[in-house]
Length: 156
Image 1 (spheres, helix red, strand yellow):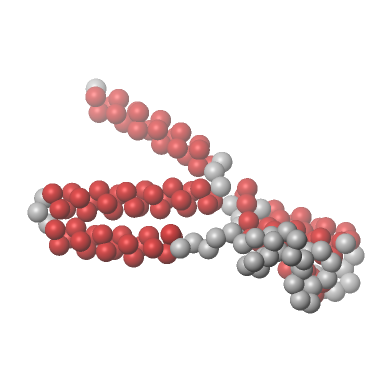
Image 2: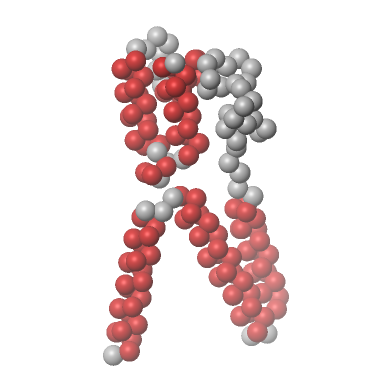
């Protein structure tokens, strides 16, 4: 009877966790994964040390460090304007047009359009691409902001 209850509690816990993850942002899930891997690796190393396998524990910690180090050095979110050191009042970079810091040619390339596309084509391309790239649908914040920037550049 006890194993059945433990199985039921485990199943309910997993279902609740999946419900939380389905609405979570990608960066939150990545951070959670890093913590799970880090804590699991540290617990494994401690267990190996306690059972007299110190060399295996050191190897585990070394492998853990190699796996987690790139995740810890994830690129930080850049300030508005897309350039390091660019802030809200720094203005667009060289060769940019409008207020967005993106040239019209770059904007057409981002949206996959040819030069001279009309407003409806720009809006349709933006909407179509944003469905795939929106962070709420598992897309990237950076790509969604580039799509918005391209639309704004072409519609200003």
